[in-house]
Image (cartoon, rainbow, N blue to C red):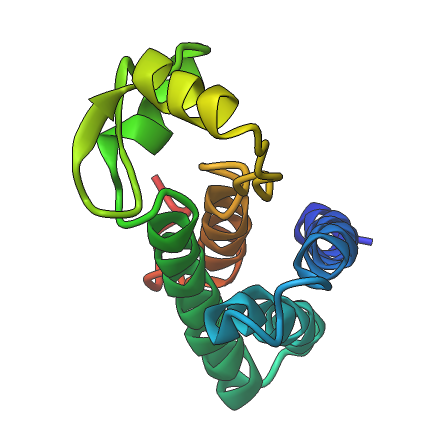
Length: 161
């Protein structure tokens, strides 16, 4: 087995593992947020692209490249939704810090302590759903880029030097 085929096989396994994780994490929100179907659909297409990559025919490899491009774009769109439109408050979580201010339901920015005090004063503690991991969708883009590097056609004579 050539090295390219082995890497393609490893990429296929990686894509399938990310698909299982994405399907599990998105299972409770698919009916509420239709964009969550993005990874559920594009990851199997990227797995199909890996299978196409094992073939020698030019149309199959071209189709695989197109599917990897679609998968990469899907990862970027997923990152946009996971970060609530690239909001600074979601991105600062990457550094392990929580923003001092946040928007409440009325759109008014308030300090985090004020929000917590208001919740405690009302006696109700609302259970908030946990936000999605902000950059996990970029892993899909990374896998797609690996597929593109593997399958991108070489220029004739590129290896000769």
